Image 1 (tube, rainbow, N blue to C red):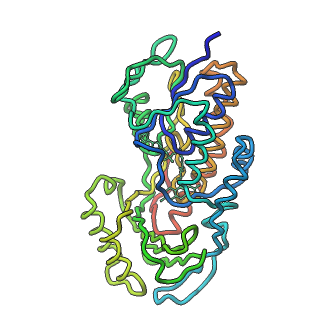
Image 2: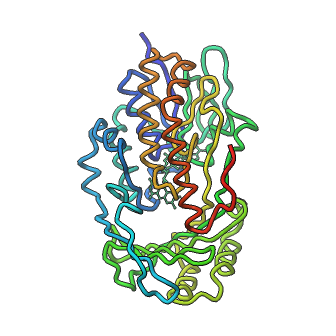
Image 3: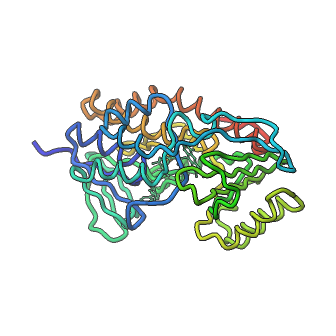
Length: 357
Ligand SMILES: Cc1cc2nc3c(=O)[nH]c(=O)nc-3n(C[C@H](O)[C@H](O)[C@H](O)COP(=O)(O)OP(=O)(O)OC[C@H]3O[C@@H](n4cnc5c(N)ncnc54)[C@H](O)[C@@H]3O)c2cc1C
């Protein structure tokens, strides 16, 4: 009997994890990724709760533990840099924290022998028909698949192509932030400094690479449109938000301009009434991003991938039954994580209004 053919878009966390479990269930799996290589960028990510069971089931938990950033607590400081409190390690580093590039690499290596990976070739069109999905690619030859999965992050291409106008589901949490790294001139040793202000937050930490200090400057914004602005405009918005602040802020703003690893991201969640549409389903941030402020995105992506594959196996590959069961199982967990992402955004000066459903 020929194996059912499935396509996954996105090779970061949810994509390779889903590929692992679907291959194990007997599917012929292809993963397409927009980036030209396995991604080696991204902040540290952390794991909480049942995500450990998923990593153990995949046989990668020990290797992942070997990349523990060994982050310790974070000191909360006032406007002049005087310590006014301490946040426990779990606040930012969960039960285990690793650099995201190591997680992505390990998940790719765990699956690359069994799964076909195609880099630098995103999907350009999806057409569903009675027995499958016809898929076109930017470079590759068009092909038919039994099922297609979007594991392509908060701005999911699969969501846009398969869900049409219903894909417009980003909920901005009222804050955006820039991140970059500089020399660890403060000598932080697996610790962080958090300085909350009026509608702004500075978070500095040094973890895996003790020579570098990661800088996060977040501030209140009213829409995610800043993501699409030029770097010069984004930097200007940061300068305006932090204007007149003392402590290390002027030095950090100067360093921002020269940073090679500068990135800007609005804090957004994905709220969809359904996570699937016919033979297409979403997993991880693509379907139900809880925002970086939740600290749950990586765990959710792993747990979601495992649940989706398990429900497909239980439903004997019937997508309608499996996707409904996947959603029923995971919704309460996702709702909790999204609440947490929202509450933390409020703490950091974002989200003036609770997101309405
Ligand atoms: C600044 C920041 C800090 C964070 N901190 C934490 C944290 O401390 N703890 C935590 O748990 N989570 C954190 N997160 C969230 C976490 O990174 C995500 O929740 C998690 O990576 C979700 O995994 P994913 O595989 O669903 O999506 P992603 O990791 O976003 O991966 C999506 C993949 O799809 C690819 N892709 C995009 N478009 C296409 C396309 N058109 N075609 C093919 N491929 C495509 C991308 O290149 C990428 O490889 C943070 C996120 C940010 C931005």
